[in-house]
Image: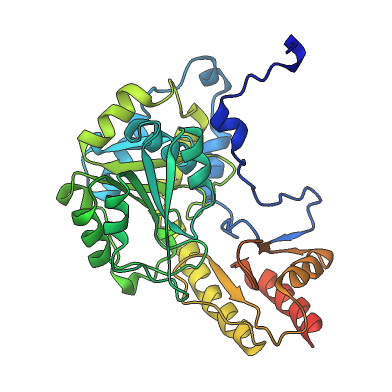
Length: 362
């Protein structure tokens, strides 16, 4: 084989499929209801903090472990600072968990369907992927943990609220998983800020109860900072310390992200106001879609997984394409027949969507 024909990729990388991300239109006119961003802007304090950044501060490397941000996060969640590691988005947190806790050749565990990046990251680590199918109504099987333990799974990721359905596991179910699983349980709470407070959902005490639990949080959704790439993990020092001191990239979170992250966390009143707006719009949108014959599971997230019934004159793929033509992007997955996922937008964005759907379906 000539040098030009030589393949340099590792075999597992050559064999895998990469992550398929949502469309990001650049026209400035398309209504984006496809990638689960917060429809409301970040706090004015974030804007002020950005304007106040001294350009000379970018000359030097950022604070290596993001301690000012870790400090305010520890106060927010009521956990010690050494129970937190700040990451370059939630996706880096996932990659670090796989790198730190899963040997190449070991198995990674997940529900099916779930966040489609999970198996991609597992394959990069040259780990096997053990999937446990959910029921048609998005319930975990009673032997979920047994199946994973029998497969020798070293790390299990459970996204809660679930993606793509938006359904929620309660604290008791998560406690059961943590107690039963032999490996590490990472609870991916990317959408947890949108959970109805009446649910009484709070997992921040779980890492103190179970030394195999990691909690993932992100600034992308609840704090309207998806363009920043900022997240963090909560866990016991036995899980957090090797990430901080060994597997994390040097200076993994830039100075701007740290400054703006602190500003976002400081303005809890504003953030909680946007979460409540999303919850209100979620209820209205779900009810209005139901009137069009488009039902969805009860969602505690900022999106709805909408079922397109067989009697509908258009398929899910056709609805996606027609809405895109009308300037509204939603998400269609080949793997989920007759379903589209719709991000909850502003009242105006949701009205535009509903008018377009009414025109298409009637």
